[in-house]
Length: 385
Image (cartoon, rainbow, N blue to C red; front, side):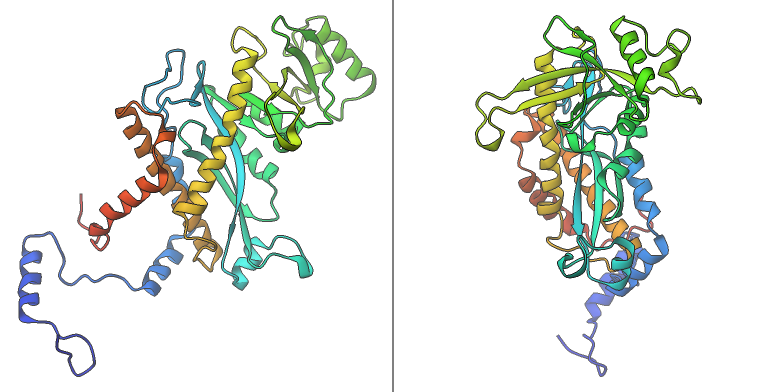
């Protein structure tokens, strides 16, 4: 290869001819070249942080088929852990992302710890809703490390749907969180904190029992009246018959919930003999048996697999690349979108082969996609249908 007087590779005549022919056929612009890294960064700055979040909201919906009474194993993505009766099983969890140690990221996201014990890198906090059966994230919130998981989770609860059942660890429980999530119309199945007072309202035939979750500010005689009304079988959602169940704004101060308690007999380690207490809005045993609810709760751990897929295998490794907060948001949303696309593809492939998506390796699918995508990586998007 020859070099011109300014040190750039000289263009051969056959390259010029090839470029003219490609342009003439309309499949390539010979004047286009791959943008430099700085040009891409400048374009990303102009784009801002909201576009990728909107793309995720528009395209990253449920993957595991349709919920409803007919949802069954073997339909698209309806693998083990996808549905309980007519509800789509979701889990909520959070994870942290290390960011480049720039002044802008430090100001926008902050560090874990403080003083001499602070983390080496700024951290972003992400809380997401994921399908248990497919690991696909269907909603997420991104913010500074100082913003707690409970705060981010409360932004997600209003997005729940009536055909979904949300599982959550005990760290997410508070009366306010339960109230917001329950008002969405979705079913809930959360582990109860150890010290939570759960008075027995009525023992059900399957050994579970009903309890009432009362707003912490409601105490004394009013609390006792609510307990008495619940034990008498009053409809706590009827303000006419139980006015104590509502505040001055007409909002409920009490929720009826079902308590499922069990232990895992073959569990080893520190959890041996531990009683697991679950709270659920599914108060009728005919809608879901106690053993079904217990099994559904343990599907919550599938989101941990999704977090690992995104951070360890799909992600760039230990630290993101973006040195500005807006670009950090873009990068995290981009990973969430790509992760969703991969799991949607896996769910479709597993349905075609009548397999559980868990039987298909995420890393192998990722390598296959990367091999097939590199051939078109430098094609400009303009002019393409």
